[in-house]
Amino acid sequence: MQLAYHSPAAFSRVLERVSRLNPTYSRLGVTLEPTPHMEQHRVVLGSGERTFQQARAALRGWQTHQSRWLRLYPGGGPPAEGQTVLVLLCLAGWCLAFGCRIVRVLDDERRTGFAYGSLPGHPERGEELFLIEWHEDDRVTFTLRAVSQPANWVYRLGRPAAELMRLLGTRQYIRAMRRAATGTILSR
Image 1 (tube, rainbow, N blue to C red):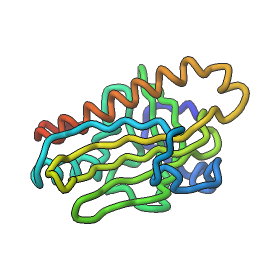
Image 2: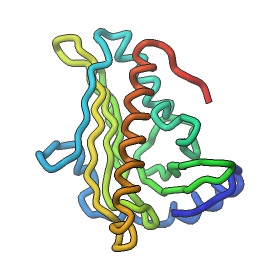
Image 3: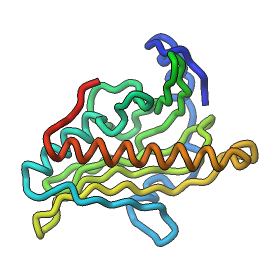
């Protein structure tokens, strides 16, 4: 976790530093196969190809990570396996920057998404999956799946705050995908 002034130059320095680090957990791609112990949220976005394509475009455009307080750096281009990004929690011109690495990308005719994992300095150790699926019954769903634990004892003490941030993040991701499915994607 890094505190950085809200500027591309500051974010670039943090990104350069965390890009050289390895993920903080060993089972990369663990969220692709759900287990009962994983946190999972699934919502129906609508139905049909149009809904799927709108949701796909939003996910590939990182719309899930765009709000007044949540951002992503760099935000251009779709997620790419091996790419390092900073998840930014911003307030009053300052941002907490958490490094994540894209560990898997899924993209076919009826399923698209990505999983990213935590890098050293992130308060959690684990992985999160963002997945859009167009099912055979024509439903389009968004699934958010996560496996994580506090990165160390300091973060374990702050677990209630971390749980609140995770809840707010989950709500943001779901709201963004619902907006995308109805064609009301917000710009930055």
